[in-house]
Amino acid sequence: MSDTIDNKDSTYTNKDDDKKYNCSLVQSFDQYVLCYTVGGQAVNYYRYGERKDCKSKWENFKFCLQLKSKPTDIRKELIIERESLKKEQRNREKSSLDVWEIRDKPPQNFPPNLS
Image 1: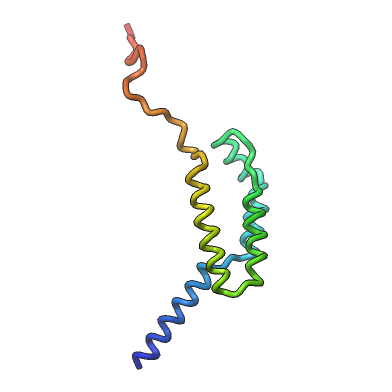
Image 2: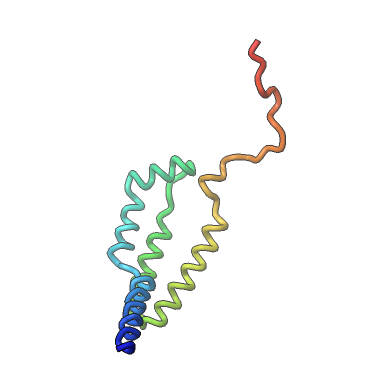
């Protein structure tokens, strides 16, 4: 009986891995198309002052397309490698939160003289 429980647990793990280390063509294509919508472009323009580059969404779609012909173990390795590269790249890019400068003293004429 314990063998069947262990077997079921490993089956669940494999299914979880399959979901985690897989990509949906429909979802990646939808993300690519949504990138060019007015809403997606407006948010990026508001935050960064420039139009959003959707090249990465297209690259994700192409990557997903290439994975469909790969065996599961190779697919898993490729996805892990790609995710680590994307994480490194995100850490190097500017953030919308990087708009403030840290001060070590208050600005001149602060607080203003109201009299």
